[in-house]
Amino acid sequence: MHRHSISVAALALAMSAVLFARQDERATAPGSPGIVELSAESLAGTALSSLESAPYMKVVEHAGARAANVSSFRSADQRFDAGVSQYETVTLQLQDWPIDEFMYILSGRVEITDARGHSRVYGPGDGFVMPKGFHGIWKQLSPIKKINVSYSSDREN
Image 1: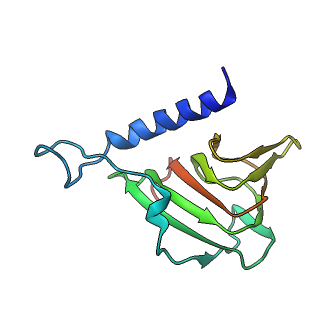
Image 2: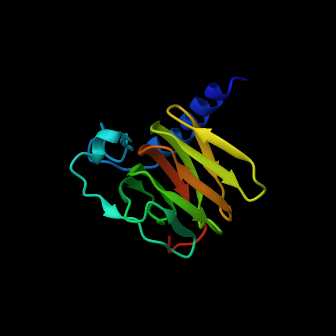
Image 3: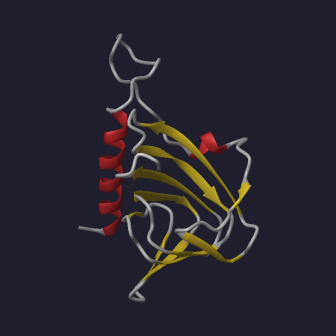
């Protein structure tokens, strides 16, 4: 199967989980779930904040780079989250990534290198999963916008 087909199929699977999980005021009948849209347009007017190092990531290039995230849906147990993000060009050292996260690149390019040194560049139309516990380098080759769908086994995330 062509890698783009896999990306689209993965996005469709992730999106279906979101679409059937939310009770929304736009529902057509009382008690029926409504559709939750994930669109880069929801980032319009969202303030960018400086990316700060955290226990699971360290800014190694482009200190002061900024990012914004809009969470469009969060499950009642707070473990499943779907939204859109944008990041200015930045390089991050990732250590013990805290969640399972599906990402679908809308614009821009990022090179991800795992702990074994395997590297791949992702761009518009590419989707991938960064599993909980991942170690590696996230090197953006340009600013990016992405859809992100995550699941955390910990209630705090």
